[in-house]
Image 1: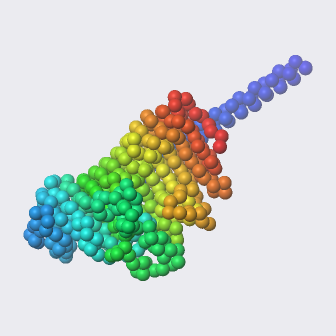
Image 2: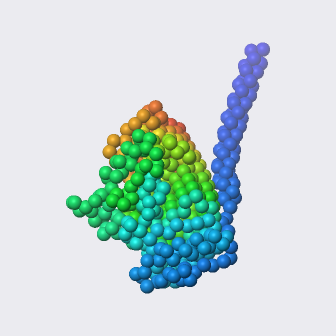
Image 3: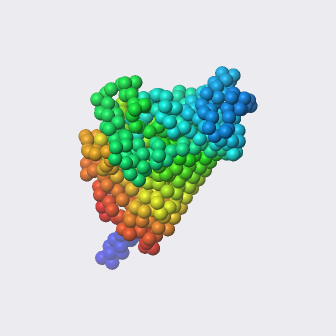
Length: 482
């Protein structure tokens, strides 16, 4: 009887153990299955966004600017000839405004509905460096709306607009004109020369004090540099195949724009604040097959600055980056620092990033004056040759233009890097600093290999860091205690 009881108890124990193991296996398998499904859902959502971005279409009618008085002698100002061709084209239902082979000097070019500004291979528009050639328009400077010099190419509240072709747009910016306004001697500024700092401070104060945008007047006798190409409140936009060089300031700037495709564009411009592409308050933006060699961030997703961002209150969302190459720049793909209205749903895949002058591959930057929420930043299939500082940098204490402390504590959550290979990782694999009361939440590295990094982690106030099949300096890293 005793023997039977012992045998019975042992059997029960075995059954319990087996049931427990089966339950653990079931939970583990279910969790893994859920993880796979979640990953599929993320990238399926990206595909659905792409399908919803309708291609632009134009009438098969061409308006050659030579027929409207343009001359390619390098000295004739073609602003009026290009303007006339664009007006006639749009009035007649749209089509192609052709910039033929040659060099054409111009001031500001303003696009109209249903116009494709097409640069033939061998064509170059080189822009005047005379500020008087850029009339006052409703635009922005570093995430704050104002009345300022027109962008060099500008579309305001237009539908179905494009810039295409194998030609070049050349802002002609250098240390002898626009760049020196930044106030740095490395860009040509010297004692006694004008600079932008006072104007920036005045603009920030206007926004903080609720001054209406039409009353924030800058332009002539002020020193806020113009954006290069800006699509302001436009729908259905295409920029394809062109080369862009020597920008005064931000280069491609979709602003409050919807359904934007930037495809096959080559950007090479190393001036101050020469971000390659800055989608701001924009939705459904596809950036693909492009190359970026810049003086600032290659791609920087924006959503307004401080009080002005909160006033506008339009998130940037559904931003897709595919098959791009990033060379020089502060960051490969970044969010901020102007992001007060929030950024959601960013997808980056199949890109190559590498340069001794690339500071960070993936960068999120904000502070307590910005506030706002950054969420859902997904990266996969990236090759990184070399970065200086970090593979991933997330900074809630980004500091520029003096005191950046405020009462608007930002939130950052859901960042995922998958299938990433890094040959030279710089100083840190992850450099992340959050607030104790608002930690950075949910960073996942999966199938990530980082070689030759000085310090694997510098992390403060990060919640739920997952490292799955992640190797740093040849060693698998299974967990990290924050």
